[in-house]
Length: 147
Image (cartoon, rainbow, N blue to C red; front, top):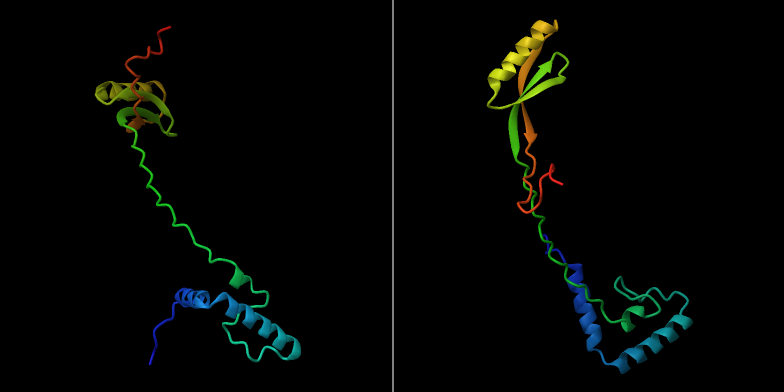
């Protein structure tokens, strides 16, 4: 028959509370008696159980440490994807971009590809290229050409 799993932290907390309920005089007298028994007894470890404190009594004197609650992390605001614009690119056989045209200028891009194919004995083709749109300048700021 399987028993309930013991929560070691809860058991430790209960043990600390039980020790705190003891009067300070009783714990001092008990400490003196333990010291006398330890010096007279060669074995000394027979009467100590698995939950016995180590010598020095640092656990009895120090107040229990209270952990601060962890700060709630704010999720990062996702960055907005940049606006993209579609354009037609004229590429050669080695995928090198030779020319680029706006999306609504497909006819001009076709003409350029045919012209390059006739002029240079090679393969040229069109492919749609997506590029990020430039950020609009603030209305109060002068343009790049103004001085």
